[in-house]
Image (cartoon, rainbow, N blue to C red; front, side):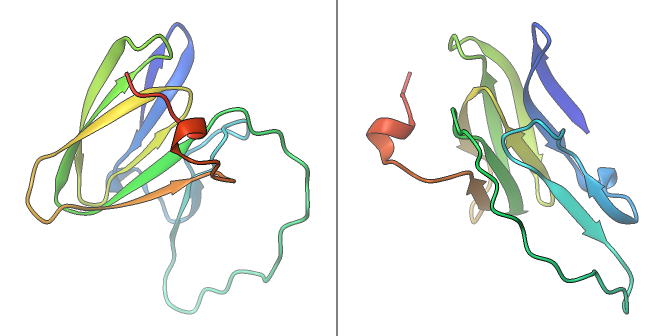
Amino acid sequence: MRNIEKDGVVLARHITQADWKDGLSFFSEAADGIQVGAWKYDKGVELKRHCHNEVPRQVVRTHEALFVLRGRAEATVYDLNDIEVAHITLEAGDILTLLDSGHGYRILEDGTQVLEVKNGPYLGADVDRRRF
């Protein structure tokens, strides 16, 4: 896993399939606005049933996680002052979590498929984002 940082602030985390370990692995820190983990188990393993408690949380920024299903893409990560910090080439199987950052993407292969997950609720494009 590679953290993309500036001035001690983690802007993004790039996770590859090589980072997956046996069992349950979490790649996020407890304080991250989006939690990302991976399962790697053999047949027959059962995970104990559960539900999540209702816990009030204050959301101040949208965070997102991308999972590249197929193809390749390039992500550019910016700090919150719109200054470019990193270019990351994402391959099939990679995960990118975007925390306190700006970002943009360029698709590198035809048919690229990316699953994007964000924290909600979604308040609409005019409230949730600022283009730069």
